[in-house]
Image (cartoon, rainbow, N blue to C red; front, side, top):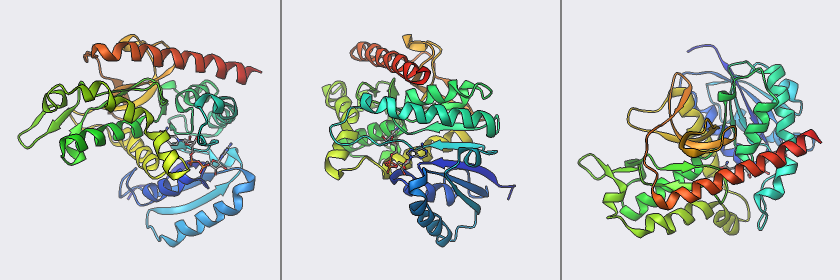
Amino acid sequence: MGSPIRVVVTGAAGQIAYSLLYQIAKGDVFGADQPLILHLLDIPPMMGVLGGVVMEIMDCALPLVREVIPTADPAVAFKDVEAAFLVGAMPRKEGMERKDLLSANVKIFKVQGEALDKYAKKTVKVLVVGNPANTNALICSKYAPSIPRENFTAMTRLDQNRGCSQIADRLKVPVGQVKNVIIWGNHSATQVPDANSATVDLGSGHVPVVEALKNDEWLKGEFITTVQKRGAAVIAARKMSSAMSAAKAAGDHMHDIWHGTPPGSFVSMGVISDGSYGAPNDVIFSFPVTIANKEWKIVQGLDIPSHAKPLLEATGKELLEEKTEALAVCEH
Ligand code: NAI
């Protein structure tokens, strides 16, 4: 076993963290032989609840956990961390649009960007989960200028996982047999789920999902809207936002940053845009990426189906609008 790494989870007393911490602590994310020092950040009124979470982590008796540091102080939370899960934010309530959340949440990510800049390792890998995730990641990176912009990513993995599951369900195959579903753009209702490059293993190797589904119109319509609106559907049913599945996706995302993507597979995440596929520059846009040595690369040369092109434009436009609003809030 190597020496422990420091990992911070913000919003550590919240719903997503409650599932995420267990996955991290038992080795699902950084590896079964990677000891951990867990830094748990939440706000002062939540310190009592956080104390309960710390007790439970202890009671799980997980051998990889070497220390747990609960705190409300970003200086302590971000000190020397190598990986950061920025989950803490105000969650979206039923009927609330993401834009309503923007001004409240963007300020949190400004402060945390500044703290990462001051206290974290320069190699820290930052995953932003708290919404609006893409724009929060952009702001966080802007206020952490000493850390490479490529180290900041936003989570669209839940949308990708939802897309894979919808297709697996349609084809009646286990979800592990579906891969390379893409989520383009913003983690919002304008996101573009795209199965055009996705493949499915039907027993004798991978074939395009489009072929397996015989060019089903479902892929251009209901598939897209089901994935786009799944978050709202879960809120309507549970009266709380998706927590278990969001935590699983956050673990998957960081796992792939740490360990890389397998040959022939790619995953979607919000990364700083270089204008690939006509996306606007300098926003955090979800692209298909491959990962090696903890560095991502946007997959180039994929075909974007014609029905998706105007949708890509719309999600890019939304990200530019969010960026303008967020910068106005931060510079106020
Ligand atoms: P929650 O309300 O259960 O937990 C949020 C926690 O963050 C609370 O304990 C709160 O006290 C804490 N918090 C608030 N401000 C903070 C700050 N400045 N520093 C540290 N902690 C702070 O919410 P839940 O369900 O865990 O969701 C967290 C976020 O994740 C929300 O913004 C939600 O919209 C987002 N989300 C993102 C998804 C994605 O796919 N990117 C999917 C699902 C949720």
